[in-house]
Length: 80
Image (tube, rainbow, N blue to C red):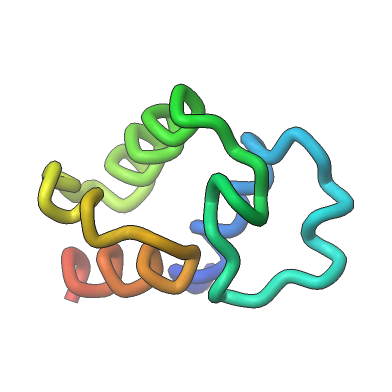
């Protein structure tokens, strides 16, 4: 069974313009600052996560997301 973290990272990697940023990845990486994902792609990422995890990610949830680790926590709270 694929873990939440692995599924989230798989989604993020699809939208990362430069795969080299993953070489030194930590869960504290910011989506825009570190992974260089633009805001339009973040919408696609949220939609993919809602579909893959069968959850509803609210605007309030999105406001809490500052780094990859925050995404893990939001998904875990929705699937628990």
